[in-house]
Length: 466
Image 1: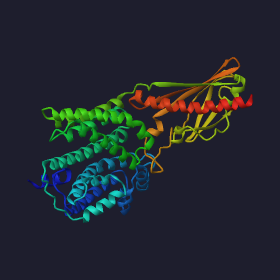
Image 2: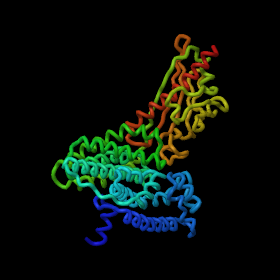
Image 3: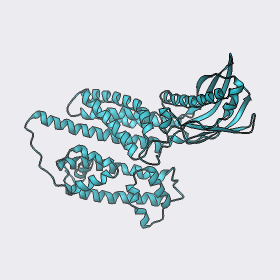
C-alpha cells in the first residue's frame, strides 16, 4: 500500500484503527493545512496580512453570525455582519473535508480507547468537541476483546454500519444545506425534497451494504441521521427550533422513503453504490431548476372572519386603528412568530398610511380603498421579519427570515347582518420556498391565527363601545 492510499484510509475511511499518536499528529498537521487554506481565502478577499488573521475565535465561534462579526473586522469592505457572504461561505466549504476527517477519526479513536463509538459524534457539538478532542489525544488504546459468539460479532457489525450511515447521511444533509442556501441562495426542491430523500437512501444503503439487515435498521438509522442533521443546524445557529419543527414532517417522511429505496438498492444486484452516488450528483440539477425558474411567484389568499355584536359604524374606527392588544394567550403567538400589538394611522382616506406594529417590527400599509364603514384595503410596502427564532443563541443566520414570505396587500370587509357585523380580514402574500403546497399549510395556519388575534380584539373593543 503506498503512502497516499495509507493516509487516505486513515483520514477518510472507517476501518483503520486510530490510536492517540495518529489522532494527535494528524490533528495538528491537518490544522496547519486548514489554517493555511483559510489564510489564503482571507487574503484573496482583501484582508491585510497580520497575526489577526489567525484569530482563534474564528474557529471557536459556533455560529455563522458570530464568525461574520469577526470577519467583518478582518475584511470590513467584503463582509456584512448580518450576511457574511462569499468569504465565510468559501471558508465553510473548505472546512467540510476536515469536518469529515474529524468525525471519522473521532469515531475510531473512541472505539480504540474502549469507549462507545457514539461519543465520536460529539465532534459535531461546539465546546463539547474541544473536551472530546483533548480526551482522545491522551486516552490510551485498549485491547479489543475477542467475541465468542457470532451474534455479538454481527451486533458490532450492525453498530459500525449504523454509525457510518448516520455520520455520512447527516454530513451529507448539512452539505446540501450549505450548497442550497449559501451557494445557490435557494430554499427549494434540492433542500427540502432531494436532500432528505438522498439522506435516507444513503442511510438505508449503507447499513445494508455488506450484510442485508432489512428495513427496520435502515428506518431507524435514517431517522437518527435526520435528527442529527437538524441538531447540527441548531447548534451552529443555521436554523431555529420552530423552523426545524415545521420542516420535520416533510423531512422525516421523505427520509424514510429514501431509506426504503436505499434498502431495496442494497438488496438488489448491480453497482448500487454508483446509483447512490448518481442520486447525490443529480441534486444540483434540482437546485439549478429552482434558480432558473424566474416565473412570478403565486400570490396566496387567506381570509378569516368573525361576527361582531355591533353595527359596522361602531366597528369601523377599531378596524382603522386599535389600541394595545392584551398579552397573547394563543400558544403559537408565544413561539417567536410575529405577533400583532397595535395599529395606528396617519391621515384619512386613500393615501393615508396605516402602521400595524408587531413584536418583530412595523408593517407599513398605505391605504388604497377607504369606504367607511364597508371596506378598508391597503398595500404593504415595508414589513419586519416573520419571526424571532427560538435558539440557544441570540442570533440565527437564516436568510429565509428576510424575504421568503412577503405580505403584498390586505383588507377588512364589514358586512351588516341584522344589526351585527360580519368582519372579514384578508391577506395576500407570496412564498419564495418550495414545495409551496407544503409550506402554504403552515403559512395559512399562521396567518389565520394572526388574523383571529386582531379580529377578536376589534370585536371586544366594538362590543364594549356599544
